Length: 281
Image (tube, rainbow, N blue to C red):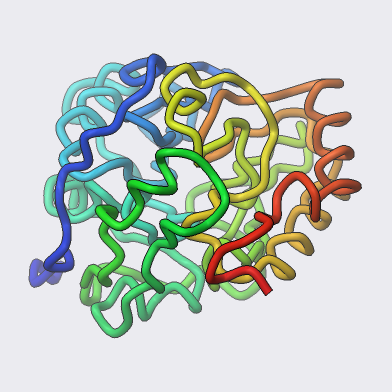
């Protein structure tokens, strides 16, 4: 496995956290959502077996915590079959290089995310002028330069299947990022939404800290295509998920999820799209 990997020059620890940091929620017997500072990653697999995958890779500097959580759930020296990325923003790949070196496993992402994961192209800069609170104002300190995984990252299969995640399909849900994906399992209607929508107002520092549950569109300061983001939310709502794990916020399920998603779809332009910002059409 190619070890010539590097983060962007702006890679750094981000001094932001929430009350949920360091805690996990077993959403289903084979689905754990764990919060690192202000973002979630998932462990998908039966904890009675050593066959699991990791979805997303947390904040910068969180590798040891992610490894510890995996070993606590699946056993000492356990190793995932793969790491699946919903997208490549800094808070979803923050520990990725350390995890790949430690576990020696492949990474899978959508083809449109590969330029941002192979050092070819940086994401657009975060927008501190966008309508929102203190987190939006802090966004210029967030890394946006491409990381380089070299040959360790592979393109997700074109048929929608997800390697080592039996029953799950990946769904292209762009808007927040060009190659953003969500993961859906039909048999129990489980959704891992990434940042296509989230369950906390991610732009507001107080709400991020308290993790006050409220369905919202993708984080505004890093969303560059609002028409695509709206279409993605509509696509996910049509799946009628029974439970949703999002990249930020507490998992949501049942009637609350159904009614909240319906409201987000019907009022997307008012609830999700900011009134102003450099990426607002």
